[in-house]
Length: 101
Figure 1: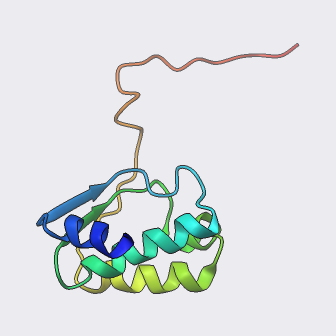
Figure 2 (figure 1 turned 45 degrees about the vertical axis):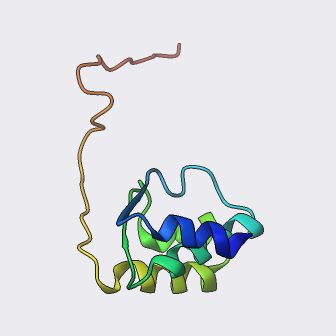
């Protein structure tokens, strides 16, 4: 069943996964995500967004070896963009400050 689903997803020329690492992966999820990345490697495009640097992906996936192998595949033919600055989603919001006495 997994092979069928990965094959189905490979039909799309581009797959976008937003907020990788927002929630940590358990071992099964990390393995599935690795298989997804591997199945698209050199076959179809993949865009990943994350607020975490690659150096923290070992924590997210619970296994530095899987994270390293995944990063190798992701960056091999990639243009990596690193953005710094205030959150786009929070633009226009006033900063709340609290004081304690």
